[in-house]
Length: 80
Picture 1 (cartoon, rainbow, N blue to C red):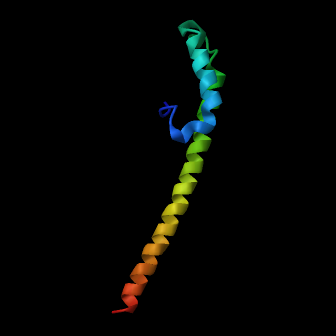
Picture 2 (cartoon, one colour):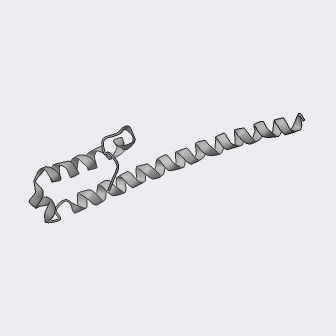
Picture 3 (spheres, rainbow, N blue to C red):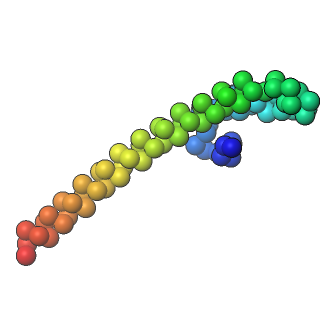
């Protein structure tokens, strides 16, 4: 399973997703014979790479926010 393909977070994978959709458009028999497997793997790898980028970005933002909160509490403790 994968998330919704055409979202703002997945714009880097647009060409790979289009190739998968074109493969799926060829019909059920084409898919059932495994002809779309490579395209599906490329989509999965691309989406994973994009997710890892987002995760790293979110982790950095959380780290900055956590440091800001720590500084705030340190100031409160100093002023007691």
